Length: 201
Image (cartoon, rainbow, N blue to C red; front, side, top):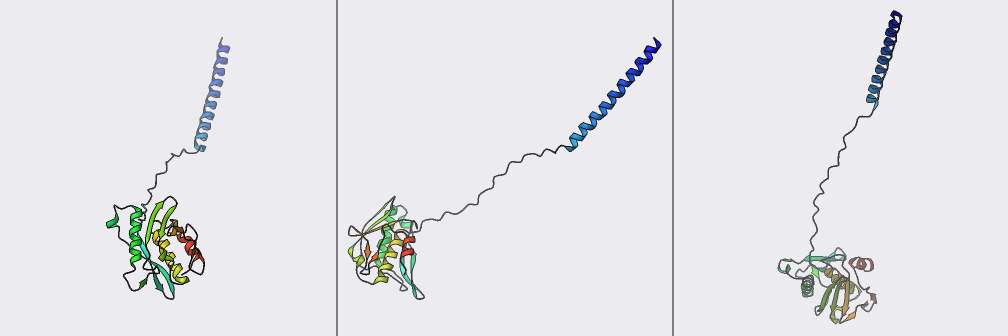
């Protein structure tokens, strides 16, 4: 009985020693894993950046005159205040601009290539652009430069509310295809870009 008890005691001591060793190894492994594992980072949602307020350009009604810049002719605008035309439609505003255009410039340093007798028969605005019908006087008098200048005045004035607007021009109900005896072809419709690309003052 005494020998069996000594064996049991040795056996129990052995088991305890093994348990202690395994426990220490487990603790070291857990500590090593914890140390080597990447530190979790908190996900930060990007903060919305406030967009700067970009001012929207307001449409500006204007008539375009001919002015001299050194030895060149240029189209020069004169703005028309919209105070008295705020309650008017875009068609009425442009019609008022052409009425002012046909009256001629008030300043001596500007000139008008459009004949004084020219009248605006009608003006209509649609999805395809601005449609103008001018009286026959528009095509009379002046040489090649004068014809190009008056065409530029009409195209730029008609597109003053929208610089990318397409402009259709007719004379007494007939589409304007050729201007002056020099045979200046007028594309329909015409934009500011097309005028600048095809004509030079």
